[in-house]
Length: 273
Length: 313
Image (cartoon, each protein chain N blue to C red):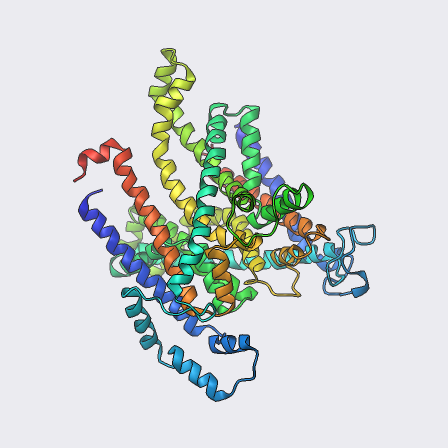
């Protein structure tokens, strides 16, 4: 019992951290000392000081403010990406698992095809080809990441279909949609949600990676990956430009990873080691 | 692996290649950029509508989608991947030029990664829930949460700029230029792989025959070498195949950071220039590489696992 309460404690602790990050994103306009788009050319590339805690970039914009606003961009991109792949992937997987037959064969063939290929390579090609912007980066990563949820949704549904309460629902004449919505979905949702939570950290990094390559957020958007790309050119003269955005990614990803793991531990105490 | 299975796998690989090429081809067809304009813009002269139309016809870009695709496919089947717009040479030649850089980097990164993660993973498993285990797990947890390109930049700054141990500009394939990108990729992969080694070794250590061997007084190092590692090997090889899949993508980003002349850097430039044949060729090559490696992994099972050898052929 002792470990269970410890798991719960950790989960709530990390939840507080996650809320803190969300708070930074939501209240960015009140927390940021400067306007993240405000270019003051006379103050370009200034080292960290009392006035500008994290220094300024090439255009004299305040680095700290851009990092705080960057939390907004990153979280908005990541949460929409995770929402899209979770919903689309699960929907396809559950459909394939419940319908069976030809629908299942065709859908799973497509999934197998996508899984037989390194996703991030394809994502780079897709995002680049569609033209670098935030929406296309999300689409590109969604196109290569939904398969995991389709697989998961399908296998969970197949397992549930054997159960008596589903057979009871079928014999009592419930429509398939009703069964899917009322009986299948509530039962597979916990596993799907835990998987999605554990994916957030990875997705933050992959989105930042696309932006770093120039295939994601475009200037002047404050986005951490893009800021690292801009800072790279001034690595000799202004190292703070590449230090702080990277540290921001590290901290946020660590917190989301810890949170995802702790969520798994309280949802499924048997699987935790 | 039986002959029939092998054949089945090869057919599946061909289908995947077909699907992937069709997907990338349609993306390029739908994409907003115009390669003809990009191509002529490089020449930096004002061009007439006629020249644009002429170039377009020359490249076959005025044809409908299916004609373009099947013309390309027919070429590939005959070993001709078309001409790269930006490099002005056959795609195959351009790919051969960049392949050695990426292969050397990928190989050295994989070896370095194994040298780091296998000992760390074993130590972490053997000293489970002791300070050393916590330390290794903590470091690998941090490693998983760090974007690889940032690690690359930090290494570049500290080891290249401040300590001046390595040259910072890439450009050519040489040993001292390779150290930093190798380390960067190895760190990113080792963070994940150390955990996987730990899990695999722990699983084996939990088996009853290990307890039996320990009760009979065999020394730990003997148990590890003779029993645990050979058995933990199999799942680890599969996971290594997956890591290499990540590596093929990660290498693109890291090559950009260090201006390393490899496939990844080439691909990013090709995408920026809308050099469709080159991008298409790149995606196809990566697919073949990745699937080839995973096929080798599965074939190696036959030799490593005696149970499969007995049933095979």
